[in-house]
Length: 230
Ligand code: CA
Image (cartoon, rainbow, N blue to C red; front, side, top):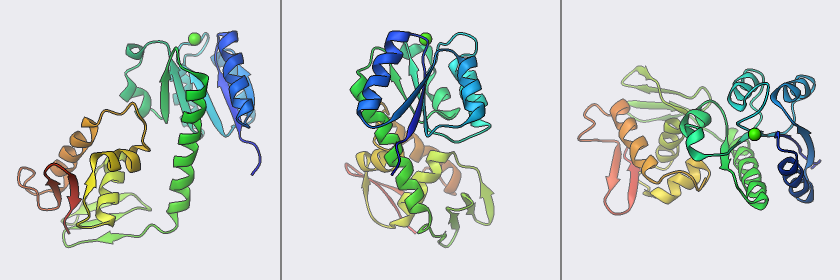
């Protein structure tokens, strides 16, 4: 496989340099843009395989740049932020970043995150062809169109809600622990709060169960995790 090209958008030259050094050592080709405007110029010519994007940038900030880029491409993005509070991380991720790191971070950790995101995407693409439509009595789940029908009417799910429902429904009656769900649905990203799984299960129940307080499909297995009952 040819070397993956990574664009690093970072206005601190020393940080850009050290990140670039580690990425090159890990076998990536690296290009650096020192502000949002320059990044746009580069991205307009060619979309790289990966973008590492500082949130606080001169000219065009990281969030606007992400939005702009997402209109053009689904290239994976890792966002870099100076303070955890600076970004509403959910907003950042929902806008299309695949992961984020908080400064100061170890360049080695960033490299691992890049690899993890690439692995996750590779797995998604590899899995795409074997995906099948699941049909149980009141629920139909189509992984290609990502549509879910419950009692004949279409319901709206977020990307993660869909992924989690599909995973569970692909393996009816099989119990998944929270850690397994975090690993399979969120790609094992360490920054995700394990409570996220609980929240997603609750929202899914509200959407697919006729009585969310007494679920028939998405069942809790106390002390273990969750399973799908057809
Ligand atoms: Ca900055």
